[in-house]
Amino acid sequence: MKINKYHRPIGIFDSGVGGLSVLEEVRRQYPLEDWIYIADQIHVPYGPRSREEVLGYSEGIVRYLLGKGAKLIIVACNTASAVALAELRKKYPDVPFVGMEPAVKPAAEGTSSGVVGVLATPATFQGHWGFLVFPRSSSGHSSFVSFLVKLIILRKSQINFKHGW
Image (tube, rainbow, N blue to C red; front, side):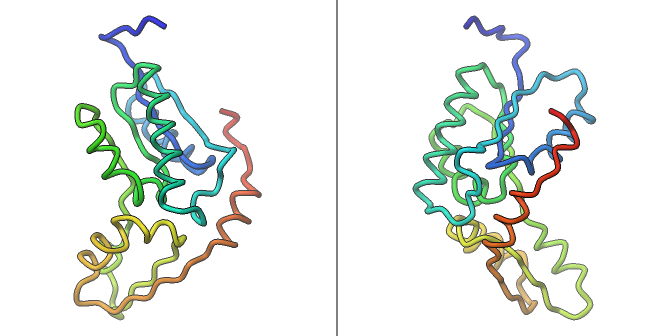
């Protein structure tokens, strides 16, 4: 495949179809861009998987997107962002990556009770979020974490494909 170095697509991936909401928004903001969206339906959900599995799936998708000429990659999966984003940036230093950042900091700043709850999968907290972002973002506040693997699996199995993409 010949890649046009002046007009290259933006790659975006998620472990399922949840990233379609991210794609919808970036398409609205950047309507002249071309996009390649990957929904890893074979390995969905990433949440209950090991760090090594999530990293391996993410690296494989990134290699594919780069092979298609992606100029930037959006990791639209919370778990992949938490587990693999730092490693992907190290492995591909010339590739700009955009990942998902948890909303813990705005929640901590906006709470009147001083309590912040986080619903996440275990794999999300295997990555940098669990040890770096969460404590930094919620300092001075009480917090609790609840792992909702079954809820996430159930939700991803009931996704309504309203967009038709």
